Amino acid sequence: MRLSWRVNCPICNKEFHIAGLGIHLAQIHEARIQDYTELDALLRKYIKEVIAPKYTGKPSPKKGKTWEELYGVERAKELKEKLRERNRRLGIFSETATGDKNVMHNPIVRAKWESVIRSEEYRKKKSEIQKALVNNPEYKQWWYKRYIEKTYGAITKVSQQLAQQGYHVIPLHHKYPVPDIIAIKDGKVYAVEVVSYPEQINPDKYKGITYYNDIFWIVYNKSGDTND
Image 1 (cartoon, helix red, strand yellow):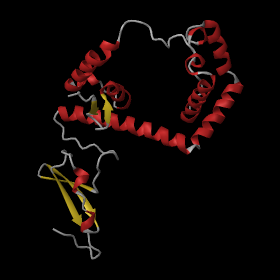
Image 2 (cartoon, helix red, strand yellow):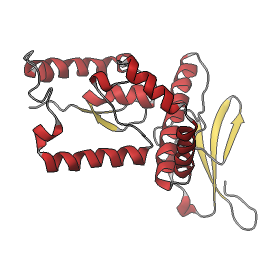
Image 3 (tube, one colour):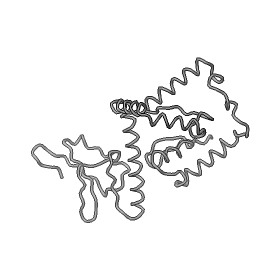
């Protein structure tokens, strides 16, 4: 039976291939796959059984070839345009250069590049692009998603650390179920949800949540009375 290499993220529970989980943990949750023994062992197993047998030590047949050589002129043009469109959509203003064209490797090219980015004309153009991006709904949605996921990952990590130190932690972030009321009595913490009709009661909302001692669903009537 073939072993499945797809696993769930231990923090947000999204499904990933084991080869991509480490990148996801590092970029989104600022965590390391090495911190999770079973996942780290599975990744090492994947490298040993799948990656290593394919590696012969020979350079890739694609190395050193242009897109035109690999895909043909028309297909290469189409792929490059898709890449440029994605970069424009995500606010990436330049394409990666290699070899002597890379500003980090060639001091002459770097000096020319620095003179351009410090010019008044460049700063004005960059400011116009940034203003346009701020009003672009697609870019705002992308940026907001990245910001929310990064914040969520940081809160999750800090919550885990505080819990390990003995704190009773209740993370308050909109990716967590946040109740209408948090009630505390006799050292116990209760989540209280106030709804208008019994049909609105949804126990699945707190499925898997352990930081509340209990969940109270209270049906609030128009008369001002509440159920027991």
